[in-house]
Amino acid sequence: MNAENIRVRFAPSPTGYLHVGGLRTALYNSLFARGHGGTTVLRIEDTDRSRYVEGAAENLIETLAWAGITFDEGPEQGGDFGPYVQSERTALYREHAERLLAEGKAYRCFCTSEELAASRERQVAEKKDPTYDRRCRMLSEEEVAAKMKAGMPHTVRMKVPLVGQMQFRDLVRGDISVHYDVIDDQVLLKSDGYPTYHLANVVDDHHMEITHVIRGEEWLPSTAKHRLLYEMFGWDPPQFAHLPLLLNPDRSKLSKRQGDVAVEDYRTKGYLPEALVNFVALLGWNPGGDRELFTLEELQEEFSLERVGKAGAVFDIEKLQWFNTQYLRALPPEKLAEICEPWMREAGFDTIDRERTQAVATALSSYLTLPSDITTHIELFTQDAVTLDEESREITAAPESQQVFQRFIEVAETQEPWKGEEIKTMVKTIQKDTGVKGKKLFMPLRLAMTGQQHGPDLGMIAELLGRETVIERIRRRIL
Image (cartoon, rainbow, N blue to C red):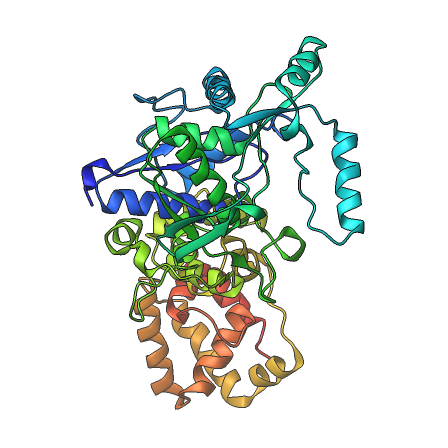
């Protein structure tokens, strides 16, 4: 494999959001090319004008950039093989359709949508697979000329051989054989003059010198048509690799009916790009061994198509949450605070003091799956008074607890400095003075300060709450 010549492309349609499956396809293309020193191309396939969404292409590009996936060539970067937007290349597709017509490898189809629908209904009633019945393939040159002269709308269809088979090798699935009698005479050029995906895809991949087509399994049935087009044009085809489906936990195809499928949905909820990319990379690719956490650079070094499996990969949201937890905990304090700040303010926390904001976010980081989770745990820093349930009130009312509270206030009023480590040393002094230790010492203090039986380091919490707040909260528990 000549690494310098490897060229891959990610070719989304601007019909809406970036699906997580699309993110994985873009990622695998990028990892494969980067790992071999190749070139990545972004091409916008916008020829289906009925589904075109204004601004979708820009949103796709921005979302991919957020995920850390960049391209060497594309609408923004330019390159030697542009334009990289298909609607700007329509003359090229028409030229190639005319070439196939001239060579007898395609034909004009004048069937109306009503005629095609009636034909499909008839075939379904006869318990046959609905395909085009090729009626226009039988038209004479004179009949075609007459219909053209009359200005009848028409499409251009490829003329699939009636016998024989197409054989090719897929880099993920191995040897594949498809009989021509199950391949439809695919429309290549629509009546509006725009190409279908099939024609534009093949023409562009050839002219952009794409060497490897890495795409989702849903395109596998179309590959025989694409390979046939390469043969018709006399071109060498690229190598194909079809990635396994993404599945819901019930093994059905991943869909919005069972949960979020748009990358921007996860982004809005506060999932980190590093966590989402790491998670998605493992949906179908097995690095070998037990390791799960990879940076994008490490993925580029480790990734190989040989380790991409055929079986569908389950999109396990709990696993994604685990990844996000790991990456949140690893963030430096300033970055963690920056991410959590909108939710901290929403919960009533004053974020003006940057140092304290970072310290609070760090103290609560072990409880976060998403940045929004901080709104639940930050209450101990925003509430005026701690509320205890019956069990907690019984613990704080115990004689040993009352003894600890009394001594804590006496020592705390003169404790200098009021810092986490010094506060923990102070608590040890209270243990010696009262003889109360272990759970009976720490539990009532934690409950009085935070209202919770478990939580971050007690010294850190006391420092962040401040001396006056801590003393006031403990004083409230003295009977």
